[in-house]
Structures are given as C-alpha cells and as structure tokens.
Image (cartoon, helix red, strand yellow):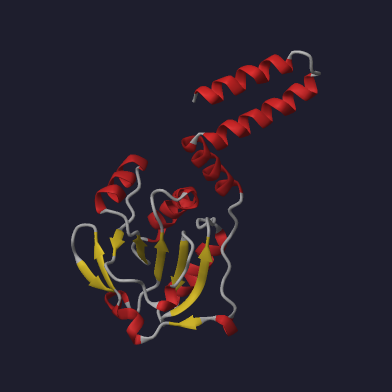
Length: 204
C-alpha cells in the first residue's frame, strides 16, 4: 500500500504542469492502475465488464444438438437442505441447469437476470444451480444478495455431456433430454428470446 501512495504522490507532482486534457487521460489511467492493483476493485471491474458485455443466449442449431442418454440422468445431486436426487428425478421436465460459483464475476453479473427468470418460471421449469463450494458459502451469498434460487452440489463430476472448463455454463434441456441451449459466460437470461424458447419447450 505504501508503494501505491508514493506512486500517487509522484503522479500528482508531475500533473501540475500538464494541460487539462492530458490530466484527464492520466487520471483515467491512474484509476485503472489502482483498480488492477487492489483485488476487491479488480473484482468489481470484472463484474462491471461482464454486465456491460452480456448478450442474449443462442439456441443450438438442430444438427449440433445433443441428446442426453440414460446414464447422463444418473448424475447424483444434493440440494443444500440435504435432500438427495438423481437428475433422472427431473427427467421429462424442462430444465435450466447452471454451473456457477460465488467468487466468479460473470456468474454474479448474470444472477439478477436469472433470479427474474426463476421468479417467472419456477412453477413450470426445473431450475438447478450447481456449485462445488461449501454449502454455507453458497447460502451466505444468496442471503446477502436477496436471491432464493434452488442450490445443489454434487460429489461426482458432471456427465461428460455437461463438460466445460468455464463458469458460468448454462444448459436448457427439453422434455426429451435435448440440450437446446449451451452457453458459457454471463448472458441476458431474462430477455424475450429466452422466454419465447421456454414457453415453446413447456408447451411441447
């Protein structure tokens, strides 16, 4: 922190002789440097960037669409209240499956959108939010943020069909087990494109 203070002090001494436009550009640069040097500020910057770059999710093209097999539905899940499930308990339902973590800025960026979608479809779509963090960490995050989505964890790796190196990763699965949406990164889930798709899948 002392190094940062000295850097700022030296910076202001040099600024006195510069024009207004130069000072403004230098101040912007200084703020970016400070943000990158301070971890909490860096996380907030990543969160802001994720929010600004979110776009609508895309439906998988029919020729690239994958269908879950029987073994994929045998994936065990544990709800944070301790109730145990297999994914096959939800077979035949429209499923919104999201892999996330509390420390992940893009995950946090899309959470308000997902909460809105959950509020609208929680009686018609099975929402499954999977994190491999400790339950108390997840619950504290939900309480602090005012969210109430259903949280799950698993003691086994997800089926290969859900393999991804990135979080958040989100899947929308039809009643037939077809993965009609597979998206990585923060998305605008509460938009007309998603609601039209869910309405169509629910009606099938």
